[in-house]
Length: 397
Image 1 (tube, rainbow, N blue to C red):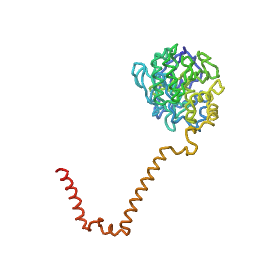
Image 2: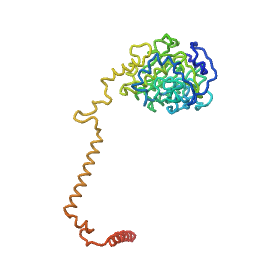
Image 3: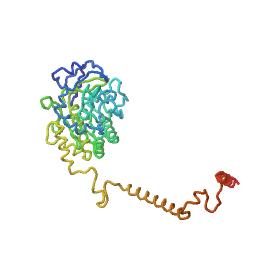
Image 4: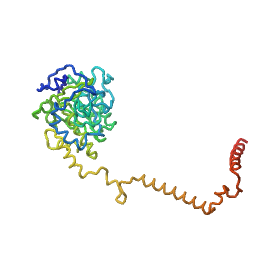
């Protein structure tokens, strides 16, 4: 079981150089990050440079993709994420909300690595995530105190959380770093269900699910690209930066996150970029593109590999469309067109019938109803009103 460490720092601490040990815990006051603050931490994000995320942003930034973060909760009020977080279920039994004590330390940090977009004028302040336009679905499956102590996530919370993410249509699901020693059939079936709905499931090393089928296990590396986590290597398909990663924290703050939970955030963000660029790919194909014979994540290489895989995969299944039909015109379009044509034909027939009975429009010009002498406008109006009253009396009688 891996212990994941979040180190809260002040702005000065974020700018300081040096690397702290992966198991060192240090908390200090964090200044608030308001929309007009000067918290520009971009130069303190070497992890983004390591994975090369910005090199793909001219293609897309993850817009339209939802990444579910199953962890301690995500603070939806943070300016670097504001407007792109949906709060899902709290499955811990605490029923906490953003702003409550003990809510969202690690989960908010992971979400920031995935999708933070900065804040302030031209989003120049704060930090950036790998997919800064992606949406976040927050599902709380573990408590802050359990996460900081490397505690377990209940099997029931994990199963329900995965199913909830799948039912909400998340294309990527990031699991927590902690988990039970043994995985039951319920969690395995939840993962299979998520994959069937099109979701790629990403798990940090140290989570029991990291070694399961259909789950992409992720380990961490330091600044020199050396493995630093204590996860089982055979369950790690890919590694990403995971040492002192500058990211966001609850209450408009900033923090550093270390461990494979941070690394999984990088991979989940990269998966969002691939899903946005090539939505026709299956979860297994997205996983193959991310790994791509690489030990450490490189987003440009992964996106390029995804493009190669997607070359022969259409956005729709041509086998489901008869060869003699235009695949761009759905079946309902033919029915709608036929119905419109029928209405036009009926209208034409009515018009022709009227034209033949009074070809020169004499009766119409004279205001004459065929079969009845012409009357003044007042007379016609009176008769229609009377006719309605007679009909009413006849009905009453």
